[in-house]
Length: 329
Image (cartoon, rainbow, N blue to C red; front, side, top):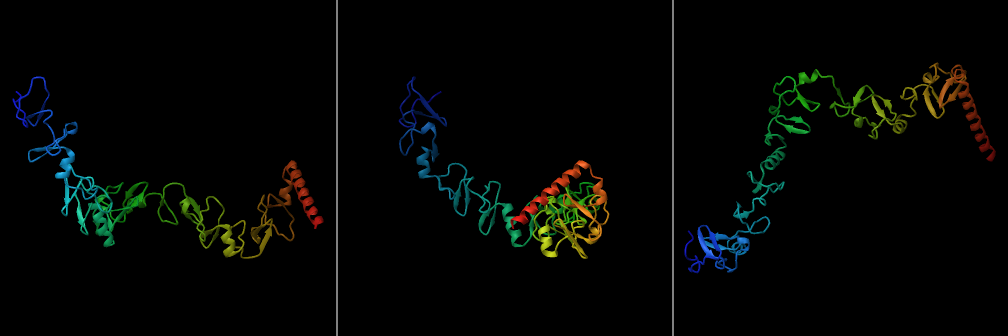
């Protein structure tokens, strides 16, 4: 049953008027106002202090603390640190900016999340932070997908034995050394890591395609021709720059007599017919050029007649052009 008088004016209520009920106490609607500004509460929202009711603006001005982070009044939960007040969302790690709702530690006198504090201490001591437990790794660490871990967090993918820092990663899993040694894998000659996808086989090693590069300019070959010298691969430009003309057949430096034809160079014993691999002696064996490759006369006669006609027509055209250039001079 509604009480007979208003809590402010102490007058009664008529049967037709609206009665305000707040915490079991009743008011006339016009009496239910902020005790400071005497204005009605916007949308009925009020704040109570020592039994007296205030609108939000007056409550903030009179009683609410100011957040040290954003400078606004704090209504609700408050975080306190060093005599300063904070909104929960404004109380954050001074290193990474993450909220510190789940707890914090002091690092150099500042509130810091536990991972950042551990990382800072580890950096100062030249140690790693475990990517799983966020604790400092005091002994040797295990590397998995580029991050450091305590070895005891992992077991071998095959034998399920606990791993040590010498564990090996392959196809997204970790293996102990004995199990890893049973896998048929290739190791990149540059980065020394397993090759899981496409590999390049060259100079007696396997390579990640992006790691097979010129030993001088470090530009990837990307399917282009390379030249070898003492176990190293070079692009043609830097091979010629460092070692001279390479043999077109073996791709090594020409050590003995050099044969130069069609803008290319060969070792003398590698200058052979492109059709039958017969060695060509440039002084006493007649050969012909087809598509910048040497052919002996015997292989040339085996070519289709129509193809030979086209070659002769092309040769006559080149000879005519050369003669015209000479006449102009």
